[in-house]
Image (cartoon, rainbow, N blue to C red; front, top):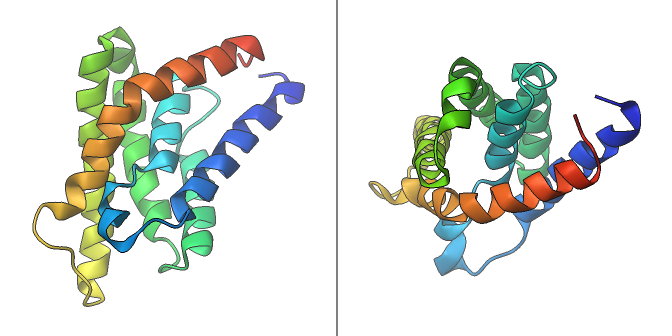
Length: 159
């Protein structure tokens, strides 16, 4: 990837981190998509040689710091998502968008399951199956996100 185009990836991840902490009403907090996980899935699927578990770890540590949670919670969850995504990126590329959305639901669900497990170890657990709401919202948002990200990637020639 050309070094002059790396700023776009960094800006997108910073935007994802901002959206991760953007204040929402208490009742709607479970409806927030996992923007950083979606970006990790997208970049690993599109450019698996340039992006991988290292990127996921760095973004996860930043998300842990920004959200003020246990250091390593999001980092390990995103590395797990990145690993599964690295194993299956060729398959994901060949799927239709609605099938990719289902796969995003599974991957973000893994992320949410891991985060909920860490929270339960600390004594804070979500109501049953409510912790999967961000995975569902991420899957619903995936077709729009992939359209926007593809346009940005092609416009700024990130290869």
